[in-house]
Image (tube, rainbow, N blue to C red; front, side, top):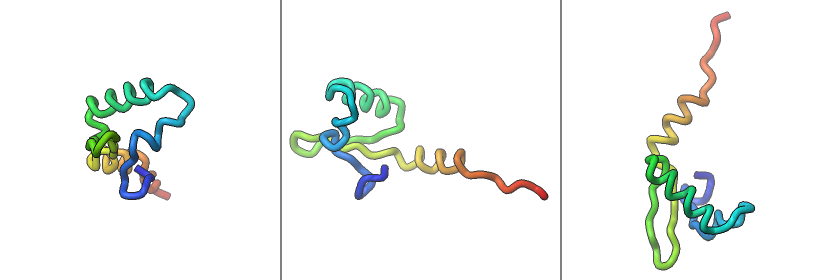
Length: 68
């Protein structure tokens, strides 16, 4: 989500210390769970976090003000 345009090519996230098939497997599982969307452009697939997921995560991570 922090990549320019809010999306990343699988080629940009393949160098994370595991093999490319492992990265692809996990991206597929995240997509099946509804956390990611993808779009094929030529030979590469671009992934982006589902906007509703970002909104939900933002709500979970927001610290509610405490009463004094």
